[in-house]
Length: 356
Image 1 (tube, rainbow, N blue to C red):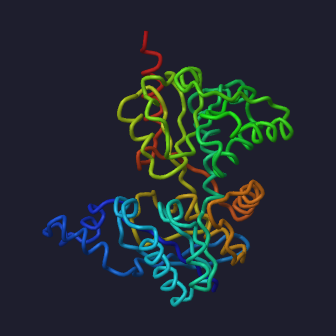
Image 2 (cartoon, rainbow, N blue to C red):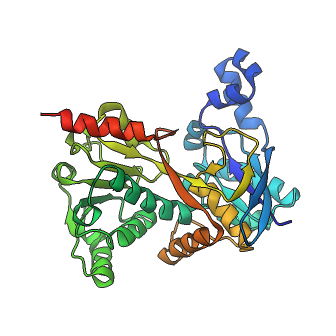
Image 3 (cartoon, one colour):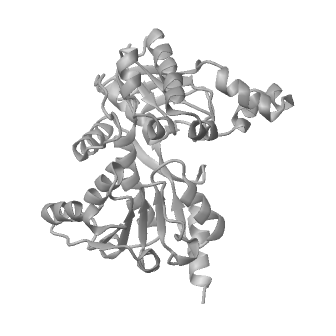
């Protein structure tokens, strides 16, 4: 049977304590030290994944370095850790490896790992973008926002992920604004959107004014301006924070209870999947990044599909088509690392109507 691997890492040291309760007796500096020196290891098997067309099995490989450590350590050291994990997956028979959570965002997008390990690596970015746009549509529906007439605002459109988000979402809206410090950085993108959709997008450096008008905001960058304050958001707005770490969404969620903040979607995996590890998602569901490697394995596309820092619109559309082919679907939204419920949405909507 074809086999894939997916790499995870702990968000915080508390994740170690949850997995290994005995670690709660160790001082934090020892835990930090252990996280740096413990080699990657197999965490669990993934069974029961099948569509009407194929069946695969997989495993989760744990790379024991926390988000904070990843952001602080030299990239060369991080790449060494990731390469070790990919080589372990290769040794265990994986034909394709997916980089999870922050690994693809701050390393070199799997290029070094694929070159040195000898098996394909995918970052999951293509299906992450596709899923993010599906999340935006679903969130707009839940918040009773008419997407075609909504004011859409994109941060980070100069980047690869942000530009693809902008090009695809521009097909859904008539009022579209890209935030930029220097307009010439986005003139080519705005011209491309005009050619592809007939929509004349607005370019602005006035962040506060743009925020106050926006019904839907897509944050596709971690380098958000320090002047970007939650108080400037329009009540009832939808914010989709695409890039990890989700610093902006956490800031907004902590200060505004009358806007909907989403970070990612919950993807239902076909078959009767058993991940044999609790990584925070409901049973049978996973992140779009994990789903991408499973989709490719089911399709027998053992290739470095989403590779490096660039995301191509053709790949986003292709992986979306393959996901539908094998029965993957968006089944829920997540905010601040937790599933959003209908009750959560209704609370937000009541707070909007309660404001004078």
